[in-house]
Length: 320
Ligand SMILES: [Mg+2]
Image 1 (spheres, protein in one colour):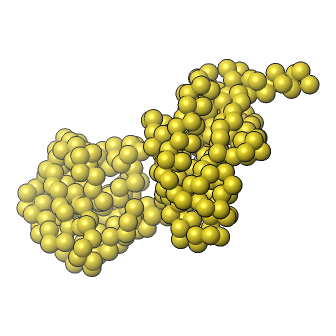
Image 2 (cartoon, protein in one colour):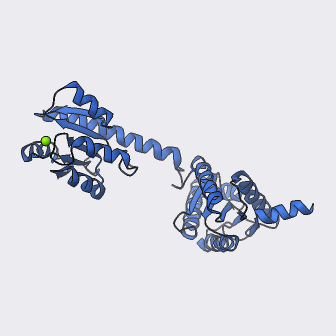
Image 3 (cartoon, helix red, strand yellow):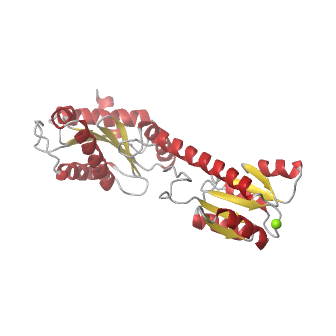
């Protein structure tokens, strides 16, 4: 999420939802913000909840005393929904007592402003909370997203692998994992430079995202030039097909790699692993199997796919 400073005229204006059952109050707040914010207004709690879902405001200025759904109920509903829980809510109310304030903060509000409003104060508070929200969003993104390629980073992948592993163990549906390595990437960097290397990785990621594109599929940068594709509800045959498409797509990019012994353009090696019907959530086992298949693909000459299912691994171990 990009930071949108208030003083940058080219940045999108912060989106504000003003909720109050009295038109005069709505107007006062509208005028305080209309010049440099996108302001939406609601005159009832029900309308407010609908507008939050439609307009995705950065902040809500919320009246407490309203007929029907009051401010506390609106705030509670926003906080109960993961989609809207992070939107900061500031209560704006004529009540000026500590009890109301405590109740408002308990309901999940970040701040409290009393009417009649002082436009400078309300602007300062809103600015503070929108900035905090943007910083929190940005930190969350940084913590989970690979900075170069924009896909999940290793930390995010580890978490999602655990989540999908539990889901697969519960549902009995297969889960497949592709480990993808760019062949001879060090030689690529040595010859073409690191900027070209970065560009190459971005394009490989785009190719992977194109083939691992069903709902639930995810692509992650596991490290350096190594990527992972996690394919929920995908059996071994499906995973091999995705891997074959990925191989083709990357080669089809036609990124020249004159120093590659494998091909004249950039290629990848892919290891595929799929859970078996008895899978009980051993994601470390699934990962190790995919990694072993990747190693085998490289040993066999790179630029290819090698795969195994956990079931077959068990069979092999049983036979040994
Ligand atoms: Mg009111």
